[in-house]
Image 1: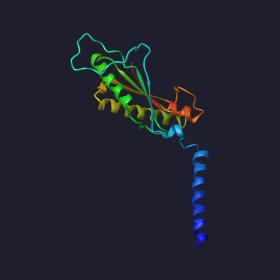
Image 2: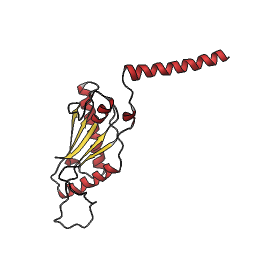
Image 3: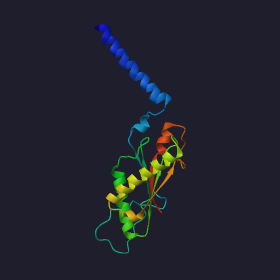
Image 4: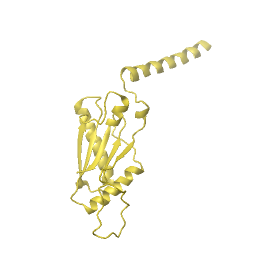
Length: 179
């Protein structure tokens, strides 16, 4: 009985280790610590934005103009179009909505990006899906769909090297900015 139990435990451990080695080490499909986070958010204000814009109040004088809310970058997990929306993104969305109310002819550019893993066509489509998911969220928060332009650069515009897992994690992103 002990032999069967010890043999079963040894088999389970061997199976787990060999699967990990094949999937993670040989195929390179396992996310590292940076990639295990579903997503992270990075805010990049435009240089001319000096002070933070307060949330819009119901009764503002007509001659008060809001500054551009800047740009926003969402990071995505490997091969996925999902992300975690945090308070920073919600604040950005509120500022963007207030800015677009005062500047209705302005357009919002939502561009999806991917790392260099996989075929070019797949990465382009993945970038489009990521941008579309972000557009849907912006529309659900009151941003007019007609003000949003969605595009994908796939893996063609990395912001850092694709030779490391951390670099590839930073390149899997969606950028939101005013045109």
